[in-house]
Every structure is written in C-alpha cells, then in structure tokens.
Image (cartoon, rainbow, N blue to C red; front, side):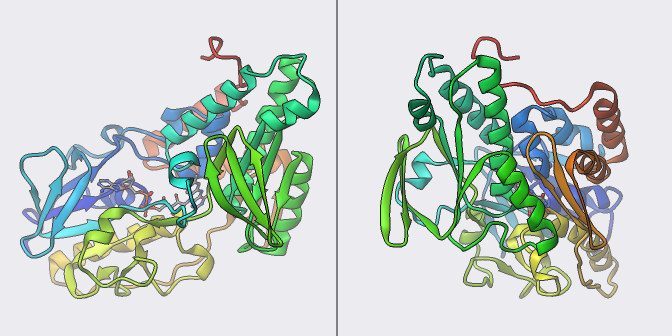
Length: 413
Ligand SMILES: Cc1cc2nc3c(=O)[nH]c(=O)nc-3n(C[C@H](O)[C@H](O)[C@H](O)COP(=O)(O)OP(=O)(O)OC[C@H]3O[C@@H](n4cnc5c(N)ncnc54)[C@H](O)[C@@H]3O)c2cc1C
C-alpha cells in the first residue's frame, strides 16, 4: 500500500475513532464517519447534566478538532461490504470505498430484554439523553405544589437509577444533589427520592475497597437509597417493578434511568466476522480483525485480551488503543511489522455529587472538594487536541464550574 493514496475509513467518532484520526492526520487519505457532529467526553456527561460544564467543553464539533486533511462525513453507517470494501451510509447515494477500515462504533444501552425498558427507561449515553433527563427532572419538580405533603412529594419525585456500577453511583449522587438544591430554592416540603437498583450484593462491584469507602460515604451524604440484590422486572410509563428476595413491588417513578449495561452497536451485529458470545469483535493483539488484515477494531466493540480486566469497555482503553492503532495502520501501509501492547489502568476518578469526587492514583485515594478539582484538571489533560484543552481549561479556571440550578421551566437558560 502506498501511503498518500491509501484510503483509511474510520467508522465512529468517539474515543477510539477521534484519537486514531488525530494520530493519522499526516497518513493516507483519512475519512471519519459519525452519526453525530461532535465527539463526546463521556466521563463528564454527569457534569453536563448538572450544568457544571457546557456542551462545547465536553462535546467539541469534529470540524473544530480534526485537521483539514481529514474528511468528515456525517451519517449513520448501515452496512459494510468487507469483500468489495464499501461502506454504506444512510441517506447517501454513494458508498465510501476503503483500503483500510477502522471499526470504532462503540456501544449502545443494553436493556437485557427487561419488559418495557427500551421504551420507558431513560438511556444516559449522549448529550441529548442528558438534556432529556434534566428536562424531566425540572418538569417533575414543576408539578409539585409547595403545599403537597412530604410523603406525596417523595412518591412523585422518585428517580430510579438502574445499575450500581460507577455510572450509577456518579449519576445518582449528581441527581440527588441537584434535586435537593432545587428543593431548597423552591421551598418544597419533604425530600426527593433517588435510588440505585443493583442486582449484585454491592455497588461498584469492580472497584477496590480503597475507593468504595468514599463511594458509600457519598451515597449516604447525598441520601441516595441503595437497593442491592434487587432486579428490575418491568419498566412502564411512570412506574418500575422491582424484585427482591422473590417479592415483586411496583412503584411510581418520575423517571427510571438505565445505566446497567452496554452492548456493541447494532452495526457490528450485521458484520460477518468472528465475535464472542457478547457480540464483541475478536481482534488480534495488533487490533486487526481476525481474518481481515486491512480491518481494525478499537474500543468498546473489540475483544482485546492483553488488558487488565477492569479496563474493558472504558474510554481509558479506547484512548490507549488508538495510539497503538495509529502506529499499526502506519506499519501496515509501510509493509512493516505490526506491534502489540499490554494496557494498564491510568487511575480512577469518580464524580460523587456536585461538590465532591474521589480520585485513585498510584494506590492513593484523594476525596472531597479537592478531588473534584483534581478530576477537572485530570480530565482537561485528556480532552482531544491542545487547542481545545487550553480553551476549556481557561474557561473552567476563569468562569468556574458551579452547577446550574434546576430552575422552573421558563426560567431556564
Ligand atoms: C455516561 C458515561 C460515562 C462514562 N464514564 C467513563 C469514565 O469515567 N471512564 C472511562 O474510562 N470510561 C467511561 N465511559 C465508557 C466510555 O465512554 C467508553 O468506553 C468509550 O467511549 C469507548 O470508546 P469507543 O470509541 O469504543 O466508542 P464511543 O466513544 O461510544 O464512540 C462511538 C462513536 O460511534 C458513533 N456511531 C455508532 N454507531 C455508528 C454508526 N452506525 N454509524 C456512524 N457512527 C456511529 C457514535 O455516535 C459515537 O460517536 C463512560 C460511558 C458513558 C456512557
């Protein structure tokens, strides 16, 4: 393959796709296709929900990030012909032809077949999802008259967060803090109810005891109810049915938010390539799709074995893989030997409400307000491109990162 003319097509513009495109700007003819017009720094979607950060901070447009040598095509890829090397995009007359293909389409919410969940639960993976959830929180608050008795308020303002992993903890503490702040501002009686529903016997099951202590404390301080060993059996419009110790209970909810699982993007299901039982693409240690030398997979869709187990399905892994991938695409074009790498944890950071966080680095945990600042600083350094990092860092430093209250509709910014 000759470098200049090699057509490299990247499908998906998340952590794996964008960081690879940034690495490949001076190689071949690079095209990035995404169904969104922006990248999303998902670890701060909770701060977008609370208004601590703005959309442009965490979701810069591809046009702002990508070098002018990279072609950006907006559209949903609906099919890929691996024999003719063509990518089909919804609504586009012509398909896009590639010499090298990179699959970086990430995952979608996995409702695990729970009745009604795909129709009635709120997903939380995109900016639009956070906007919808915030509007729902405001709408639910707006329906509470100040004279409503506390027990009725509690029932009408029940928010269930399904899934007690890191996402469930981060989201529930953020929602609880925001709602309680709104209660004070609106002089409402009683308190809102935010609950986590988790199937296993504890929250954040994949995390070490060092950080768990801070998670438990934050859940207590934010008054999040934790229901472990509890399964969601049904989600309806405004109601959720839980099962604990064989007993089912239905309760009214203002919203049930589903952060309990991820499955590969539906595009991957259509591809006739080797996958594991979860539908992940089997890749070689070089990130090449097994049996397809010119096709690579990265991030949440790839089954990469040489990695510490807690890293699978994380932005940290997709980000680290993109560097290896950039190098290997270059090596393939130059006819050189492709490399592999063992990936390790870069540290953990959890947002725990609007005022605190916990950061685990080099075996030490930092917590509270200082950890919140450290997390902002750490994430500034992981945003794509120096230019964007500088703009965002300056904005957070000079303009601050206070949450935006859940004002009544009509008073929203
Ligand atoms: C709310 C939330 C918080 C998270 N927090 C953390 C965290 O703190 N730390 C951490 O390490 N990980 C975190 N993660 C996980 C992390 O976001 C993923 O592991 C990471 O984004 C995977 O990168 P990716 O490139 O594989 O996929 P993604 O980043 O999901 O990117 C996939 C891209 O492909 C696009 N796409 C999908 N299908 C198509 C199609 N058919 N055609 C065109 N485009 C398509 C999508 O729109 C998206 O832009 C979080 C995830 C979420 C949802």
